[in-house]
Length: 446
Image 1 (cartoon, one colour):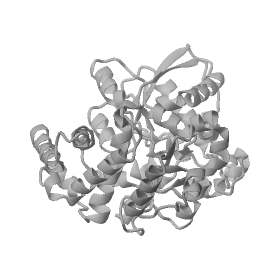
Image 2 (cartoon, rainbow, N blue to C red; image 1 turned 90 degrees about the horizontal axis):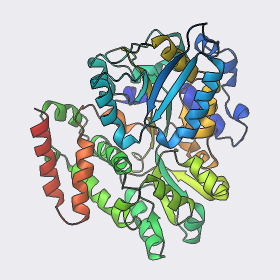
Image 3 (cartoon, rainbow, N blue to C red; image 1 turned 90 degrees about the vertical axis):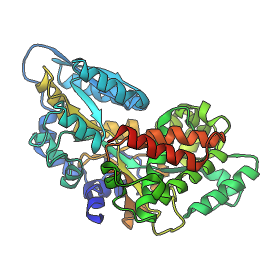
């Protein structure tokens, strides 16, 4: 298991992060691996070469990073400037709607030339369906660390190109913590005790935007596997779930996660299920909430809405899912990866677009505008001052990726998210929804 975890922690990416943690705000100075960019792989060189003389074409690019639309559009503009015969029709889709829309388009023959996917079971489904071009031998794949490519491989081949990654942790308001004498919690019980202090002081502990399904699902799909594998030691739970050999009822982590969800709901803002992701980010940016569990994606909005908070007023700490500080490492996950449709009529243009996305200039534009890390070797890692607080976790190798634990194609997290909301409003007990989960799996995955 340690070997599998290590694959996701690219040495190049970690080195870049450590360089950025030095606090230099200059993108070029932030990354100690810029020399790698100068002697870049052939992928980097070919990415910036002009397109061959040919008839103008338009390729479609559908992605689930709708929160990063402006940053992605800048990258597309740069690509089109270097490849004047290729236009990119960018189609941003909200994450909650993305999977359904992509399946519908592909099944109906509506060709999407380039699209984002998550590594793992999702990629496997599309690969088995014959929709993904094999990218393994493309020159631009040399822009990525071999360990990252190995983790994202499907059946030993690479059908997706890694794009970005980053920590998922807890943003906090330094002034609120200081005023209330709160220290950074390293256990779950300590986190809840601090949340109670914040609530007792008349402030909102957590900004929650659970009207959108994905923020709750994102938290749940990390708390549950972390407690399943690392606390309960059920390392084969998801393998067995896939085979019909395991039940949520036999996994104590199911009740733990439900209890944690109830705690988050208790210490969240009013009408959590009526406030969306953007509303939660606004709440934190207005300093109306002390904490927000999230990836680095809100940073551009926070910088825009409250520059002072962004520069000096906020920090970032790992979410302590258990009461064992040794287990509560920093969650560090891949985010979006990119695929080329094997049925595309403009495959050469689509591959040129991926080659550009793998280049250092495009990667630096991503880091600067989207505020997440990139897997491209030699790219900047200067995200935000708050991220420097995670430096000790990188220094000490205290990183893990809970998503490698999830080895099933069963979409249990969506059902779990829907069922747990019944517990919030006393419409079901934890035992009820665990029984429902097992019933849903048995009915839909025989």
